Image 1 (cartoon, each protein chain N blue to C red):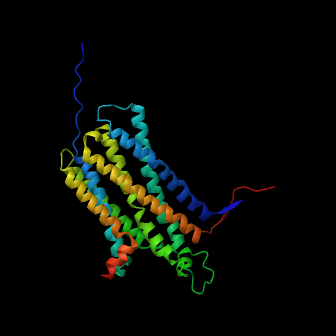
Image 2 (image 1 turned 60 degrees about the vertical axis):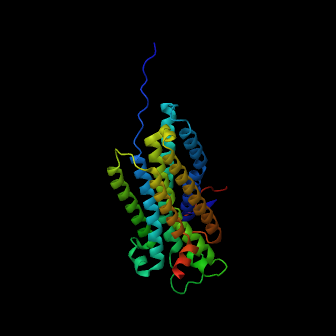
Image 3 (image 1 turned 60 degrees about the horizontal axis):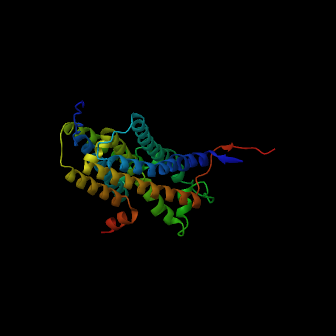
Length: 188
Length: 114
């Protein structure tokens, strides 16, 4: 059982950082909502406060790791231009998609949208983590702050869903492959 | 005998407003830079800070710089103030919407065709 180096990094980007981040969303929205609806009177335990701060900071870090690994490791492999005369485009995903009008849309809409919209997420989640850490249960007393935090969190969720969804489809149509082969398991 | 419990000190909304407005500014900047790089080849070339990633490297780095600079300036100005969060939220929401629209390829194409 083996996997190419580029496949492994792509899996880490999408299934590691990206999916972990998506899984954390429902918990974050639930706790932000519950905490900020408490009327600002109930004081959560120090442990709970610390854990949720750690949770939100981890989400922001995961969001940054996802976009940075995507833009600076995987995207250059995706957009690499094939040398003149190349007929096998399997190692050049962007060119492979654009070579066929039936798949060109995956690049023109999918990748063009994904490569930018993903960046709204780390900006939004960094802000959300900061505001929550700064105000905590007092968010219940700042109605407009609470509304902004929830809207930016929802937009971050939407942006991640678009980027992650298109990422999965792009990898189906034109996978980023190559590099050294890594043997994960060898049968006797 | 009950001990006197002072009411919790309500934090100023300025620092939170600065974070929200700067996130809106950064999101708007991301959209404007992405659209400019898509529409004008010279700007696209200018934004290629790191050749392997092309204009994406410059578009996103510039947006992050704008976002952090706005946050730094606003947080210093609003550190100990209360501001009108209604206007902050409206401005942030508008810039977020602009950013989202300007990074949506069909909208970019439609705008360039005008």
